[in-house]
Every structure is written in structure tokens, then in C-alpha cells.
Amino acid sequence: MRDEVYRIAGEALRNAFRHADAQHIEMEIRYDERQLRLRLRDDGKGIDPKVLSDDRNEGHYGLRGMRERAKLLGGKLTVWSEQDSGTKVELVIPAAHVYTPSPGLRRSWLAERFFRQ
Image 1 (cartoon, rainbow, N blue to C red):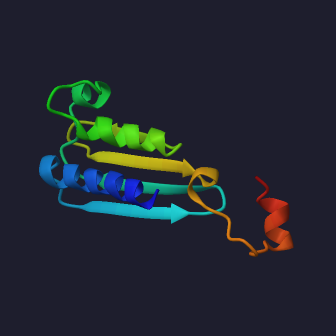
Image 2 (cartoon, rainbow, N blue to C red):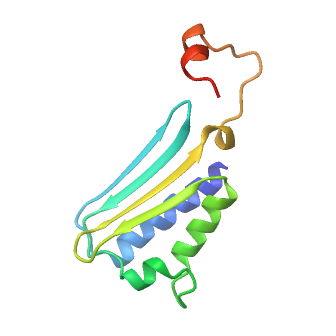
């Protein structure tokens, strides 16, 4: 799981560096009781809508690979982009697919009450 998330993040970063001509790139990784979320934003030139919408576009395998990896992880990859307005990539994986419960680790009564799965 860790390696696949790492590969998705790496591909998103490579795309931002290679293709976006971005001045700023921001990455955020958050995890909580419900999900793991990875976001990458850049202020680059954006992705051509044809490339963004067509997973079979010859020569453009990065987005397709990222989406396939996300699906195999039980998650979802979403990409928003507009010409000259940058790109945002978000990977969300539900906690049930990401986290392994630790044996012997008890949750507090508060967590049990508010974070039931």
C-alpha cells in the first residue's frame, strides 16, 4: 500500500515538474479515522482537456497509471485542471483499505462513539 501511494505521489510530482512549468507546487498528506488523502496542487499551465479526459491517449500513460493504481488500492484519483490555471490531483483511499488495526490497541470510548466504521 505504502509503495503504491508513493508511486502515485511521485508521478504527480514528476508531471508537475516536467509538464506544468509551475512556480509553486504544494503537496499535502492527511490521514484520519476515515481516510488517507493525498493532494498535490501546482500553479502551472494546466493539462490539455483531451489528455485529461482520455486515458487511452498515446504517449500519456502517467494519468492512466495513477488512476489504475488508485483503483487497485480501493481509492479514487481525481484530477482538476484548466489551461493556465494549474492542476490539482487528489487521491482518497478509505481507511478500511489503508490501515491495519493494531492488535491489542484499544480505542477510547470517544473514538468508539464518533468514529464507528
